Image 1 (cartoon, one colour):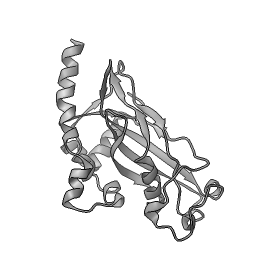
Image 2 (cartoon, one colour):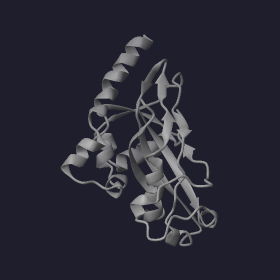
Image 3 (cartoon, rainbow, N blue to C red):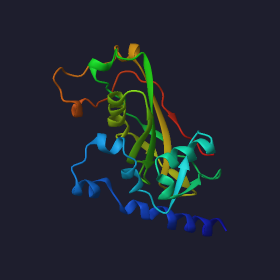
Image 4 (cartoon, rainbow, N blue to C red):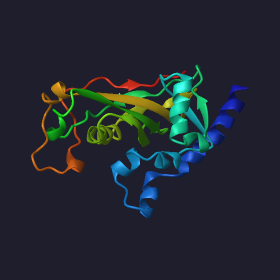
Length: 203
């Protein structure tokens, strides 16, 4: 029974892996900003069924998916209790733009992150944020994260999870500054300090 259910699950999930960000980028030279704030690029990556791993209440995550119109593209399936949830294996700390570090005392950015079977971030969408450029800096780091993928038995599965990154202006001032005059697209790199991310866990 479990084997049958797994194959039904796989049939619905893996078609979404056919679409890649690289393929989409051939039609248009996309920037990270294009992708992060537009849910349609994440929608292109989803199959008929999508496993969701989150700490949000069911009603809350469904509201997020509906607002992003992702519910029109895929059927949401919450990660079953018997599955081994995805978790962060390697993280890159955001390097926030120096001129923005004192603009706010604190803030956060909330992301939907699609993690592939290899643990790589395949796509992401920011559904809530306090400061746009801070969010872009966070996203530039987040796309480089590595995860231990979701597993059902010995089979790795793609999963849509939630990640919330917090920032604090006081702590930012203590981090290693990027080089003056460096373009925004080049400021990503390991930071000295970082708040722990809040990542979704299975329902």
